[in-house]
Image (cartoon, rainbow, N blue to C red; front, side, top):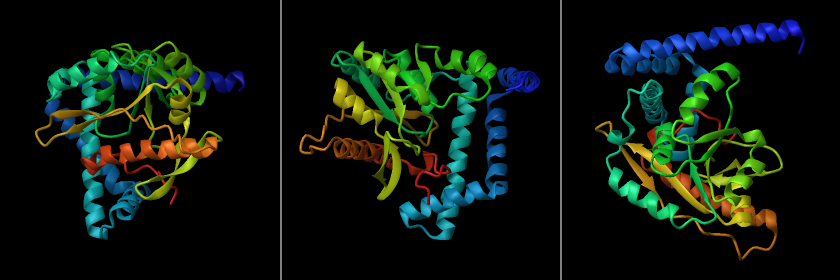
Length: 303
């Protein structure tokens, strides 16, 4: 990149950073009800105006649940409204106006399960989850109560926002974030030392370390990394998610570890695919608790 383009890029990132910073300062003083309302309006505008994304959401819902056009349209609108509530809450979390512990209805049960897991995981834990409900709340809650993780995801393109806002927020209770493109070595080191890894495995992947694996009955490009790490280091693989209840609070689900290693299969790639199918089934079960809280606007299956 030329020096001129580099300076221009830095200038644009600075403008974006200042805009986000101003937005967060406003979020510190606005009434919470107004924040929820404004985010809801923004998402409704997006639902009505961003036709291709709305149609993809409808298409995904129709395919998986065999809904009529009208049923899928209304379900898609609910998906947008649920996501708007999660985004509003994440915004409030950024400015320390959302009490994580008070939001969890079954907090005592969850803390007991986390303590039991941590005491029985000499090879570390891989938490598998999805872009479901308020996934940032789940990550913060787990770290706050003894399960900090190396979180794998896509690092934002604005390095200033990432360094000054996003990274400090996600690392508040000990979580660490790493770009998914350079994650295998870091995950291996973390598990080898008995640490924990968090993976959102519900989005399409590409490359040699992925495969088409059934997801809600249709082949979907899925990472094989979880299965590879399970075979090599034998960590606990635990599906964890939160579900927003009608009262606005959450229930956290800490499901039983998935111990399956496909011992009946000899060929390694087939073994990894079979194990990954079990992980996808766990994500399906997670989503089915309230399907309107999943990120249906993603092109998961490449229809």
